[in-house]
Length: 339
Image 1 (cartoon, rainbow, N blue to C red):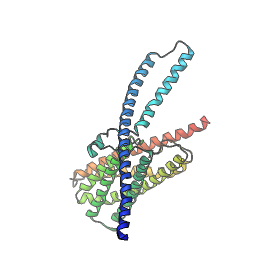
Image 2: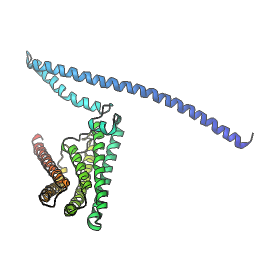
Image 3: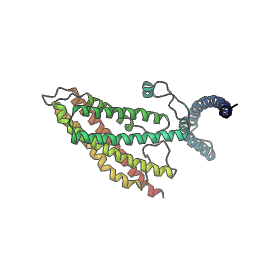
Image 4: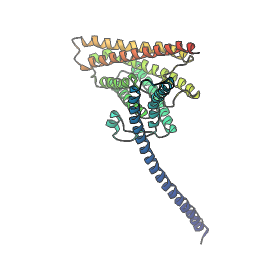
């Protein structure tokens, strides 16, 4: 037997041994996967039972508001305090268990399981989401600069608006997946991207006429400014969350900072004027479009619809930002008292 053939046979023998080991590893993997699936169902069922029994105990506690002695009252108060902490604990457990998609994800993705089952995968997905948001914001900023300063073609404006539609629609899907995995995005911040996607879609369908040309530069300047402010927001939020996570004071799936530290105030006070200026620019856009809708030449439905969207964005952003500032100033004023 030639040396070449001997070498091939030895290599094939080693390959066969590795293949058998691979088969055994894969068999164990499928077995463990089946066990994990059973454990997931058991955990989900147990959480459901716990919730039901906890509700029954809460009803009994309401009926038994006072004990026969001070010691019994103290015991009842301790049980009530523990009951208050259970819902949060259940939510944290469910963040690592498969669950049904919400209405939006069900319509977009169907019944695909989007639950990430480890802390590493959750953090990696959230980190990738933040990078995606920053990169697309920079691209939109550069594209807005090109359309505003260098070229004046409706085709390129349409590409910019299409990119905005795609960007906001993608954000709504990604944020829904994050919420499904325990992220604390809620309230106006979720609704904001739906309105922005709809607004960009309306701008995309606006025909190239006199009304569009009147509003074009104002909208492009606004898009440019918004992209710039969003870059500042990404930098501020990522800096705050990185520091808080390093200190072990914030959950890995947080996207916005709900709590507040004194060292954050410098960055926030720098950011607030830019935010409020952007909010009032939205109001200005809404009023401009409303005045344009009153002109006799205005026949496009997009004029009034875009104006309405800008007014909704202004009210939501303005009052939400005011509420956040009020909450953070209140938490700052209460901190010295607790020390």
